Image 1 (cartoon, rainbow, N blue to C red):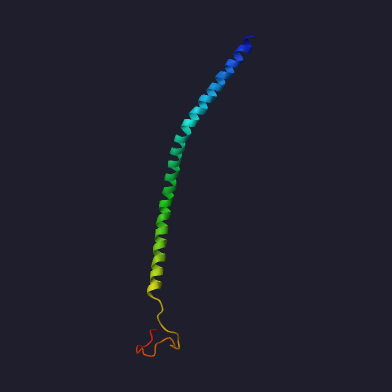
Image 2: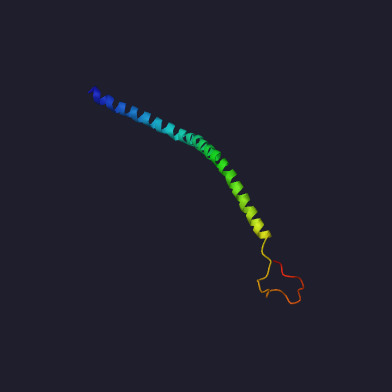
Length: 94
């Protein structure tokens, strides 16, 4: 008869320890998540810093090409100069 009386107490003790463990996980997981995500974000930013330099150089090159093309637009007429005004005395720009 003693085994039946001790078994519910052992089960309650086991469930109590499981409850304590789950409560500890509930409190610790947000802290672990914050620490882990901060580590992951710092690792990503380390690699992104090197990539940012490459993208900065590429964007400067594209900006220079765009600016060059914008400044050196062909301002000449077609080969027959039909777009030149009759009163315009300047020769067509080639």
